[in-house]
Amino acid sequence: MTYSTNGRRVLITGGTGSFGKTMVRRLLDRGVGEVRVLSRDEAKQDDMRRQLGDDRVRYHVGDVRDYDSVLRASRGIDYVFHAAALKQVPSCEFFPLEAVRTNVLGSANVVEAAERNGVGSVVVLSTDKAVHPVNAMGMSKAMMEKVAQAHARNNPNSATTVSCVRYGNVMYSRGSVIPLFIEQIKAGRAPTVTDPGMTRFLMSLDDSVELVEHAFQHARPGDIFIRKAVACTVGDLAEAVCELFDVPAKLDVIGVRHGEKQDETLASREELAQADDFGDFLRVPLDARDLNYALYVSEGELGRGPREDFNSANAPRLGVPEIVELLRTLPEVRAELALRDPVLAC
Ligand SMILES: O=c1ccn([C@@H]2O[C@H](COP(=O)(O)OP(=O)(O)O[C@H]3O[C@H](CO)[C@@H](O)[C@H](O)[C@H]3O)[C@@H](O)[C@H]2O)c(=O)[nH]1
Image 1 (cartoon, helix red, strand yellow):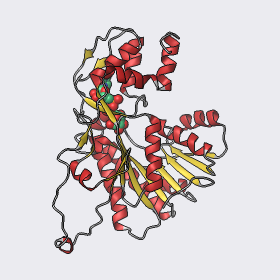
Image 2 (tube, helix red, strand yellow):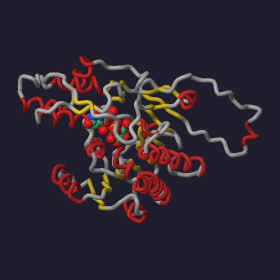
Image 3 (cartoon, rainbow, N blue to C red):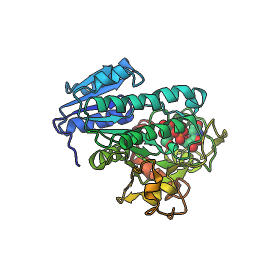
Image 4 (cartoon, protein in one colour):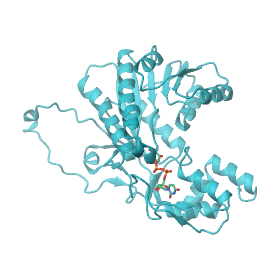
């Protein structure tokens, strides 16, 4: 089934974040009837209200942890993009139950409320850290994916299609390493690098929005969509930022933080064995068998498939010059360069 948002009502949980703001603008450009933003922070909502000045956007102060607030916010809604989450790896390590409350139970509330209100489609935003998770943030997101898939498995006749998207590090997202490196360089300090050999996927905000739109257009219940992405080492990333700002590439190596992985995985080999390849995107379908495995023995499949996961160590790797070029395409980086020296921005 394909969907259109033209004239429809859409709810974005966590709608004042980087993803939410970009998505709201796109929906407004495409003639959405109403966008509801559900989030906790009234000040951020007020900033957004003044910036956008569009009365098709309605603001709901509330928390996905509170089922009643989600139920109210999703009344009369056609589609939901669920972005509200606790996302910082180190803070979730210190407060894992908070990650469970928001990322697992909050997501269950969103799915349940959508089902109750007859919403047509819910796209749930997940992360590469949910695959082979080692930290509380990734574990809670892995459980969120399971909650979304269980809805599909347990409600085969539901009017609500629930799907997930998984993506890697979004460049320049709030609190992430690229703006941190830039701040450090501006303050005359060397960028702090955890482990120069650590690898991460690189995605732009637009890539992440397109992935959500792709899922929205193509999802069958319980699907997980992944966007193929390039990767780099954090050492090369720091060097690229130094080069862009024309400072010597001297790195301050600080060691790995709580719960960090050396490399991230977008799709496990088991998922790749089942996945459909759409060029830029992969679809991992729901395993819709029921618990009576005996039914499947005669047609059971052996676990043949790729020998490797798709991870940030074996993904196409960008070197320093390519990262420099990629960073130059980011509006925030261009703005910083223009402030520092208009010549560097060119
Ligand atoms: O001072 C620092 C801080 C971080 N890093 C490294 O930079 C990389 C990226 O770090 P960061 O931007 O903090 O992102 P992650 O911890 O990888 O997590 C981000 O990326 C995830 C996707 O993988 C999202 O789900 C999370 O919400 C988001 O915080 C990691 O290798 C860090 O070890 C440094 O080298 N120096």
